[in-house]
Length: 272
Image (cartoon, rainbow, N blue to C red; front, side):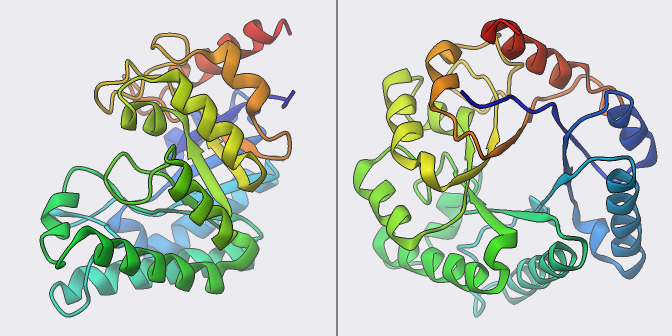
């Protein structure tokens, strides 16, 4: 059974980093935002990576920014219709991948989001054309990032886990995968059987987990143990070589207690 990492998430904000490091995590994930991709923002992010690694954290992940202005950073974005958004997605990904190689850290890119997906899908003749375009983008970043890039599942109609045919296609692509447990659970309306099947099917390609609970209806990002995911069944199915963090909604961004409580819950469940 996988050893559960004390994996914490923060921005490059000094107060957030200090809070996370006091718990001595062994995995650290930075969530980034549009402001991180100015010249000064990238310098600050690079410094924060060094700070965390100097503290002794060996596994660091950089989460691609979720938003640019009023848009989510959908890989569906067509260059000809939304050139500014497209350029931000491309350049921010290149910036993170450069940091990935320079600092020997990992970069996480979302295959899709959900809140604006239908707006982007309307820019394509059909779902198949949209899917084909997204896989072309994923192939592009896979080629650039190699062992430094991974792709996370959505709850949208694009790039989700749990459909056996789609999972087979993803495996055939040999993508390095980030598996968000709550996203899969919500996609299938709280079906633990679907979650268990997807975890089993994709296990060998998963390099990183977001261990997050949910009631299975909305994107609630609950503390582990406070939702309906059957963690007793999930734990034995995790790839032993993968890292993990707890991507939980915090009451206070400067206090990671809900993330730490999630770690303690799984440790207790394992009897450790």
